[in-house]
Length: 339
Image 1 (cartoon, rainbow, N blue to C red):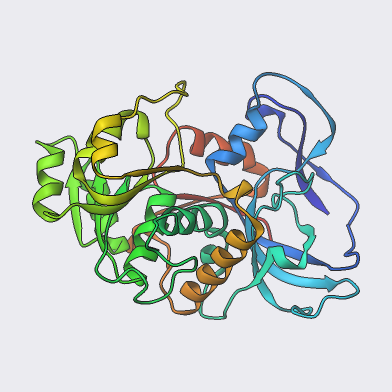
Image 2 (image 1 turned 30 degrees about the vertical axis):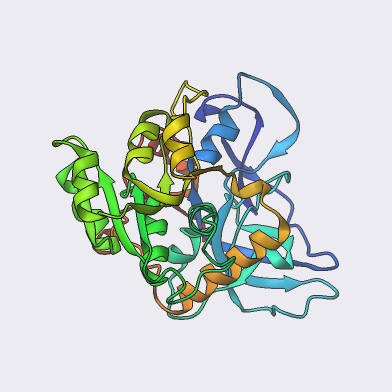
């Protein structure tokens, strides 16, 4: 079978297209024929590493993807050959990501994908949607598992509403009944955030952002889904209401430390929640997977430019170009056609 691998960390030129032996599903596992693989920032960062380092065995990149189950191992009861699925965390602490024709995974990491949802939708879930779910449910008064109406009466601020996590956060928050405000840096990104379902959009390059958000949310924001806390900590403290949560899921390139406004945070009883989807508890991850699957079934997580997430496609042999596109900050979702 065809697969992309790398044997040492480094630039995208370490990615090589080659042939591998077909894997087979063991007990409790399924084998998925990948149709579409997706690239996230975590994928190119893992490949880049902290410098050139030889790996103990070749690594197939990319955490997320979608395809069809074509083999099941002993003990698998929830999936059958022919089932359409989306997969998550495929390459986390494993050598086999989704940039290959066949991938073997534990049954829990392959989730049924309804016929109404395309493989593009399935491949675009994973890291972004599960991160967004955790960001929204870190709020003290949110349920552990989002559902329609579960955030009714709450106001959510999504920083960077045109990014993949921001896009998923807008869609999930709106599906759960929240009022959603998104911040963006251009008119084009504003249109994408609106297409995703944001009720209000603020361009932070134009005027007083805190004042604009305050006019939209006079009692303060309940949940912030924060992509750049280093730049936005002071703003977040200003616009949050009492007992709000700021969920931080990313850092700024080249910077790892943040100064938090202590007294304003104390006076409002703010919660600063740092998160990484890989290391959430099994219970939290399972709740996120169930909720995201329900949102997909309800048609709440569509993709494509008309839904606020432009798609850029590459064939498998151009996986290096796909990684470079994500690293350069391309707007929208980068997908790789495998099958």
